[in-house]
Image (cartoon, rainbow, N blue to C red; front, side, top):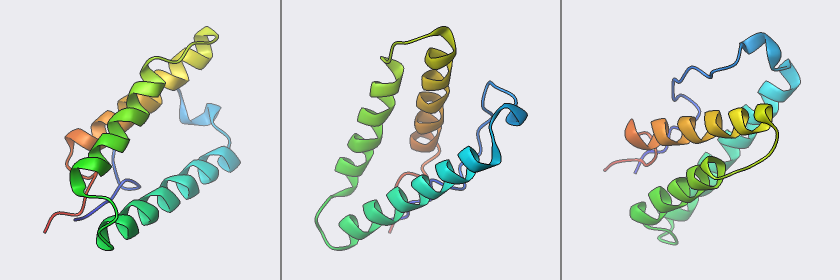
Length: 96
């Protein structure tokens, strides 16, 4: 199984300049930590591949259904699109 979330390439709908470097680094760190946790759980037989994909789908759905201001909704939609691109790109799990 291979999980490579951090390298998924996807253009966000907002300009990169609107996102601070600190926020960008925080997001990359969180993604890397989640990647390591999902890999470790799969490697130790705690979470099978289909469950990992299910976790990612649940996360995408939570963002797709989020409410808030127009800007917040756009941010949530962008996050959902990124997660869905990770799933579609096959980067969500380490393949044997």
